[in-house]
Image (cartoon, rainbow, N blue to C red; front, top):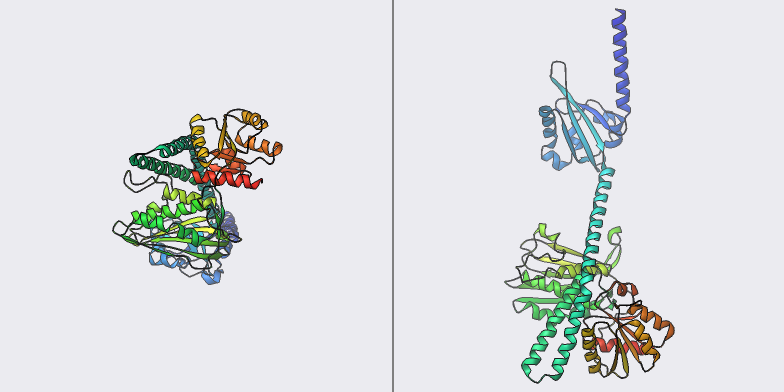
Length: 508
């Protein structure tokens, strides 16, 4: 009997140690259920994670740990049935604490059987993995942001490489078209030249949209009156929309100003209008409005102006909404769209420090909100497209002969005399000869010094010499900021006139 008594004592002591071990575990809720799912034991982990004392929960059905919707769907019974039939049930999902708060749980349920194989209950292990899940979601968000950043960088490098040469080609076309119009007598020739100029503007807009989306576009933000900016595109929108679509613009008084590039904001509104038109082939209503928006949460803290573009069109499917801002993505037939309209909106808004939101439902229309930070100060109006009569000599620094010929045509049309050199070193020698009133230089040039280097050199050696820089696109222009007056190729005659006049007045 002594040996049996000793063995029984050792078994009881082992079971007692095991109960103490399980009972004092705090990182896991370890407890037993009877075959019907009622709690028969409880440990400190269950108390810590779920908030119940042993006397409050023992004898209660474990379904109270589930959300109301999960209980209605029969998930507790399904969990026990799965464990009974398959030998184990594993799941991650929402569970409810005693105080009614939710947490994300990892759950394992194992059936417990006696020596005869009869089910006598279930062993249940629950772990609170809320922090781990939040960390995983945060990592996923960071990875998506990194992928988006890499995509933007790749697109920026691609578009930046193409933009400079493409805009130089457009610039050459622009100047020569002006020359044709100046000497044309036949009205058909003038009409053809007008069509070429319109094509050049569309080509320049395409390049600008790509650069804006890739956040490589050199923008010129100013303090804008939102009401005036929206009203400025009314006529263009009315023409684009046609007679079948009713245009309603309502920007109430007291809307805060915003700090943004006026051209890009107008382009964004027009692009949204065109998208809305295409979503309403049988007619409808396009509403543009604005409102002041003040919030205090961490994701969108501060004061903003919401510009809303709302249509009564077909709406956007949920699986498409996530793609609408991708460059070249379009649901339109071939030849009916470039897929860059919403890309331009996305890029412009991000460059302006804002965000863009899409709300849509199939058959119920679409609402797109451009949210821009509030600007401080008094908003001004758009610069008038007037031609200032030029006088004096312009030193044109341009290595591309075709672009130089085009620029010379425009400068002479404004009344300037032109001297042309192909690099910065030649420009410095020409300036030393005197007789130069203003320097107009491309940024990208061969040699040891580019246009930006030339401008900085002149700023030191000839501080009173007006300088205007031009570029189709370059990293140097992005890094120059507002240090020098910058003209984007292909520029029009009034833009060149205003830039030269502003530069000369700034050093007068």
